[in-house]
Structure formats: C-alpha cells, structure tokens
Image 1 (cartoon, rainbow, N blue to C red):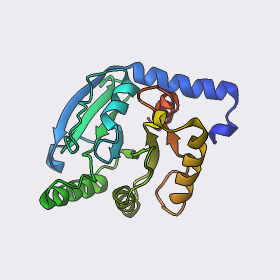
Image 2: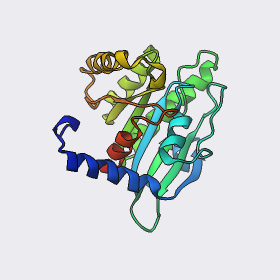
Image 3: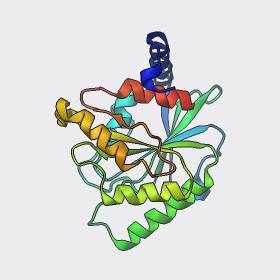
Image 4: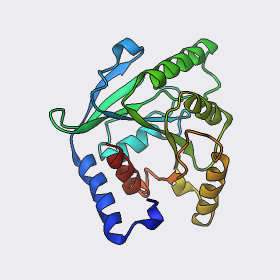
Length: 219
C-alpha cells in the first residue's frame, strides 16, 4: 500500500510504530573491518550508505534522538568500518542498524577504495537478515556517479535499497517535488531499488517520521 492509499488512521498507526521503535534503547555494538567481526545474523538488519559528508551520522542521530550516537565529522571518509548499533532490547524484538563506510571521496588512496569495495561486496552477499539499505543522497546535488556504482552493486547482489534525499532544508520547497520525481525516474530501471524516494532534513526534522515508520515496518 502506498503512502497515498493509507487512510488517516493507518498513517497515524504507521507513524506511531516508528515512534515506539525509535524510543527504545539504542547502543553501539561494534565496528567491523571484516566479515569475521560481524555479529550473528539473529535480528532484522537495515543499513545506511552514502557519499562522504552526505549527512549519515547526522541523520542517524536525528532518527534516534541521540546526538552522540553516531560521530559526525567535517572530514570526509572518517567512517572506514561497518559500525553496528542495536535498536531495541536484546531479549525482545529489535534490529541492527549499520552505518556503512562513506564513499566517493576523491582524496582517499586506491587501496582504500579497493578495500571498501571488497568489504561492501562481502557484507552485502553475506547478510541473510539484511532487509534494506538506505542510500543517502544529498538533495542539493542529486545522484552522483559513485551513488550509481553503489546502486549497481546492490542490484548485482539483489539487496533491496531505498533512496533517501538528505539536507533538503537547503532545497527550495517549490523544487522538492521535482527533485523526488527526477530521482524516481533515474532509478526506475534499477531492479533492486524501492520505487518510493524519501526526503529528509536532520536539521529541521521533516521526513523523519516517515523514515522511522518504514524501518519499523521492516522490523
């Protein structure tokens, strides 16, 4: 059922599921640099990916309401491992939230890029509990070549992913619907892409309720 087809009551319930989930405890578990360090696939998992400085850490902090959960930095490429968080109570239902290494930063070494690609491929192929990767794209700039390369990798590994436009408080309201429409057209032929594009602002807080609801439904 699309967002447009939801009744008012269904939409309220959708938002409430997201609110309840993200009110639960959220803790950092570990940073993994190889598959051998990953936690067991014993809970639903969602991951966040995006170009360096796209605002991943800011969005994760805003979603959970915890300013220090994910470290933010003005230095692109700071996150160079798979950072695992657990949202919920381990004895009850919860999910893994994974902050993936930033990509697309021109000044990193070729070896680092090669290591990143290998780690990502191994991770995507080896996590049966991974329900969706949220690919964060700066709303001011739209899809870049490095975003398309990641999308091709996700298509190849048959991992469901959804585009989340970030920093959209810096996009004129009159341009936002065009931005969403253009992005949806751009991903229409990508076989693993979810057709609905989400739009968010970690600063202003809009779009967060919907994103929380989407994640809650996956969990």
